[in-house]
Amino acid sequence: MVGGKPSRGARAKEKQVQYIQAVLSDLKQKHPHEPEFHQAAEEILLSLAPVVAQHPEYEAAALLERFVEPERVVMFRVPWVDDAGKVRVNRGYRVQFNSAIGPYKGGLRFHPSVNLSVIKFLGLEQILKNSLTGLPIGGGKGGADFDPKGKSDGEIMRFCQSFMTGLFRHIGQDTDVPAGDIGVGGREIGYLFGQYKRLQNEHTGVLTGRGLSYGGSLVRTEATGYGLIYMVEEAMRRRGEGLAGKTVVISGAGNVAIYACEKAQALGAKVVAMYDSDGYIYDKSGIRLEVVKQIKEAERGRIKAYAERVAGAEYHEGCGGVWAIPCDVALPCATQNEIGEAAAKLLVQNGVKYVGEGANMPTTLAGIDVFRGAGVVFLPAKAANAGGVATSTLEMAQSSMRLYWSFEEVDAHLKKIMAEIYQRIDDAAARYGKRGDYVAGANIAGFEKVAAAMIAQGIV
Ligand code: NDP
Ligand code: 2IT
Image (tube, rainbow, N blue to C red):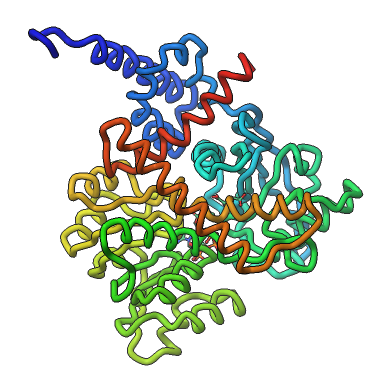
């Protein structure tokens, strides 16, 4: 402000905030029953105000309106027959959100909570995450409201085959390349790939996270968890610290949680808690990961069994209590909205210094505000968990080249990519006067590239 009058920059920003608010309110009006999608859109768009203020051409090109509108949404019936001979029907989804910088890329989630809102929030996040990797991949997401829990191998296979029968005509190695997410791991990708190959008569890199015997990449299994820890360690290193000797709480006990735990322990951290959707385990002397792997990976069992097998470990029903455990580093690695305002406050009271999001959108908007206010180093999902999709893209590269890289080569790429992402989000935050605000940094850095590609490609 000069002489009480807002400066030209302030006026431009004010106008662009109005533009953003109008896009958000239109989106809420058009899609009133999509709360997760609203949440993701709000977090992203509000932090883009300073960027949009510098680019009045965005409004003229309806860039934000196009950015929040998926290029294509596919919804399909998934009929299958259970072991008792009963016909079951689920709903399948694939949201092909944005292909400005490459073919659609993103996971498939099989979980009863899946609906269009959840898939759209994940797809929107994926656009910016994929952009942040620096690799040529657009954003998409899919899944089904199918609950894999308690299903036999045969039921899982039949479901996957039916799902792929509905999906195969919409995907392809240069069009859309799905991968895993909650409820979709190596077993499911195998069945999905088998059916794709049979229908299309093509052995291509159409899915990532494939098994090592049929085109998969080393490190893809570990990539999201390892990548998360590489980024947390990088953020700590820049502050003269490291994970060695730190106490870590991890939520989830699935793919991301297990490999985050493995790498954190390898770097000398003490991981004291993990959970599944029934409850959490607390092991003061440090989680014995081989026991967790046996229960969750080999037996597909419940985390409760850990406390029955490891002396001194506690099991508590319900998940929320995990955030009351004092820790230096909290790594939510299960699902969306695990950490609300109250949990964030508890973590801060107990001295948490770093939060790294392994899951997608595990912290609510109010939770993020608590961490921001307390000066916690907060590494948002679209940056911190990008190691999974980045390594998927390394798998695509190997498929195209018809060769395999060693574990060490892929791991070195992953480590470098995570350090580069950290640099990008740190720089972008600083450029817009928000040093250390990595929510803003990740949204801005991710969006800048997508916006440039969209503008260059005209009104499409
Ligand atoms: P998994 O299915 O392997 O594991 C999910 C874990 O989270 C399980 O322990 C599960 O418990 C728990 N969980 C799921 N839903 C809930 C819930 N509503 N309440 C409490 N616990 C829950 O999935 P991933 O590890 O692959 O995915 C975890 C998160 O990481 C997701 O947010 C996913 O989007 C994200 N992500 C995954 C990537 C990947 O490469 N796999 C890449 C980037 C992000 P239970 O078994 O009881 O359901
Ligand atoms: O959320 C994610 O980034 C994933 N589930 C991984 C996506 C991928 O294509 O590897």
